[in-house]
Image (cartoon, rainbow, N blue to C red; front, top):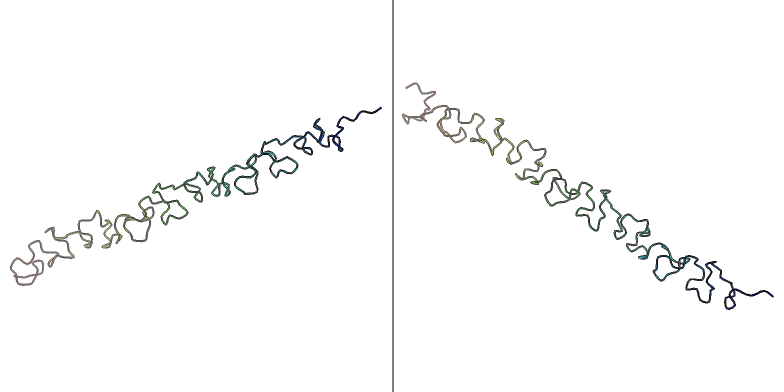
Length: 186
């Protein structure tokens, strides 16, 4: 006479885990809810992930490089977006100005165009001079004692040529005849 190993289980241990279906919490899952999430593996979309794809990105946590970040490291810098200060900037604010490169108008200029001339400091020949050497004398306005005088006070009278009524007369029309000394015959 044949003895039934599972007398109360009509399928006789269908999953082959040596537990009869009537006492098996997962009668069709031989692994028996491997991730302990109370969902049997045969119906668990993520049988090895107790969080069952916590971030809902269609990747189970056991194979997801960023199991709590649905973007999965969008900028490929090996830092998950939920802890990445700049989730869309793979250089993570390379100029360290507190503005992520993907939204930083001057991504390589930590001063963010300090002189407000619409030229970022990393490519601006005069990053602190909004007029970018207006007198074209090779000196930026922030370093040029006469920013609007290309000859930089040619007569050395301490008056820049752009405000000196006699830019080539050190005595500035000493005889007050309205003719500068450098062209005054008397």
